[in-house]
Image (cartoon, rainbow, N blue to C red; front, side):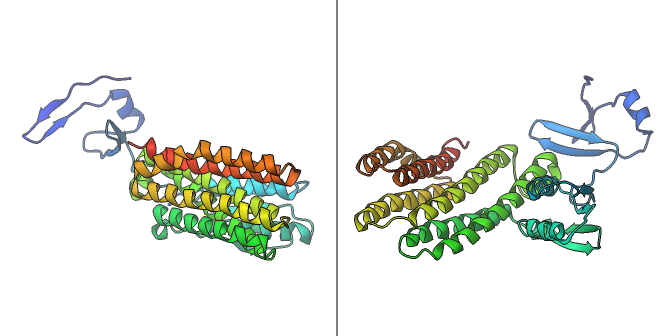
Length: 317
C-alpha cells in the first residue's frame, strides 16, 4: 500500500502523485492517459488502460462430451452460461443421442442457440444483448409466472392435466433464474455493468437472495401441485384450498412489499409464519398419512421462502 497527500491544483481540483514503480511497469510517462473509475462511495480505481466491459469480452470454452452423462453436461453448460462464455463448443460427439441431449439442455437457457453442428461437435452461441435486458422487468416477469403457478396449483385438485402447464411455468422460472444469476454475478464483478443496471453491491446481494428464494418457491409450487393430484376427499380439498390461499396471499403481499420497499407490509407477512405453522400442525393432526405429511412439509417450506422475501425488505437500508 502507498500513502500520498492530496495537492491542490487550481481552484477546482487536486492532484496525487503515482508510484514510480507502477508507472514504469505500465510504461506510463508524462502525458500518458490513465482511467479513473468510481467503484463505490469510498473507492476509486486507477487503471493504465480503459477496461472493456464483460459484454464486449468474447469468452470461449470447449466442453468434451465423451463419457459424460447429461447431468454433468448440464452442470458444465450452466457454469459456462453464468460465467458469460459467448461461444461454447461441445466436442467428441459420437452418436445422435448426445446431440439430442445437448439441444434439450440449451433450451433451458435464455439466448443460447446452436450456431454450428457437425458429426463431431456442436457449437452453441450466446445471443444475449444486455441493452435489451432490464433486471427489474425480468424480476417482475419471474414474479408473474410464479403467481400463475400458485393460482393454477389449486386447479390440479380437480384437473390433473393442469400439472403440465405448471411444469412449463417452472421451466420458465428456471430460465429467468439463470439469466438473473448471470447478470447479477457480472454486475458484482464489473462496476460498469453495475452502473448500467443502477445497482449497488447491497442491491446485487438482495436481488440474488430474492431470486434464489423465488426459484425454490417455484419448485415447491410444482411439488405441491403433484401432491394435490392425489387428493380425493371433498373435505380435504376445501381445507387445502384455505391453507393454499393463505400462501398465495402472503406471496403477493411479500412481492408487493419488495417492489415498493414497504417494510410494514413485509412485517405483516413475517408475523404470520408461526400461526401458519400451527395451522399446518392442526391439519396434520387430523390427517395422519404420508400424503398429508409431504404436503405440510412443502407448505412450511413455501411459507419460509415467502418470509425470506419479506426479510429482504425489512433488512434493506
